[in-house]
Image (cartoon, rainbow, N blue to C red):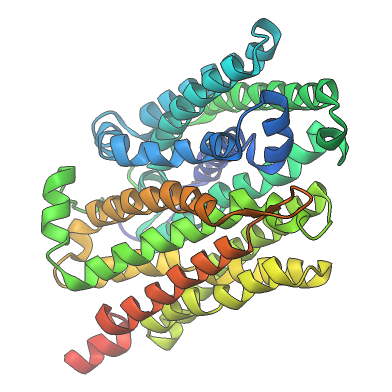
Length: 440
């Protein structure tokens, strides 16, 4: 197992990297499965003969499952272990992936295919919840106390990498010509979609098998002390946490932040192709957004710790994305789009670990309730990631040529971002080291 000597009674094992890797692989695979349709929304819409809102629901219904089963998934991992919970989620995702791959070969009706896909996406999202909820539990078991933040950060990066990989892989594997929908080449579109569904079914099943083969629940001896957590039910959590004005502000940030991110991610194809660019370039901009987020999530929390401040980074998370969204929506320049996407992700997605850090530092929550508080914030954020992209459809317009125009939807997202900034400025209290020094 590659034992390493560590001072004190705890030992850390080299095998932790294997466990982290195979867990990270199923995180990537479930994200890819979840986003199978979003990068080629227009083509899927033509192939299935459904409206844009219906097709959008294929990407949005997955995160919504966190609201309903997030608490149960966390409880199951506590009772049966992270390998059991994440493995069960991976099996569910694998089965749904296989069903999706078979559907086009046995069902002819596009409408019937759509409804089967929607059910599969909902169940895949539920399976994904059982995988994602272990992003902190696995590192806590395998990493020593001072390295747990690194382990959790790496697990989070795998999740983001899965989202980035989906945008690149879907368009590449599908290989659908840019004018296929316009020319009515439905057979070509269907063949491309079939390749995506089949490939991702194989990837998910292989990742699941690898996880069960190599993952271990616990190291031979503990790697560090296990933090004491208080488990609260969903309604009890809401009542307790919502009594705090700071937590209500953080909940607003999560709701808006998740919503803006998901709204931009699933609409990126329409926003970028509106300016005459290709679907493949739109996928590149979406990837830049996510890669920027990975880098931001890795760098900004450390900068926050060095400066001893948290609140300014939440303000920046709302302030910077607003002009970046306008640049992508209104300018229509390739280098500008890529840079704007990367900067948007860098500041917006970095707000997630900063928000979680604040909850653990709040007097009314602290480390003992941090797990429940983070779960509550993620559930609220999942509501935003479902509702806000759907609300964007209200602001969608069409040009005289019938091209979808989401520029007013971007104005809507910018207004939400401005609201979140105001909420942070007024209600969020600074909890960083500087503030604690002043109060001591």
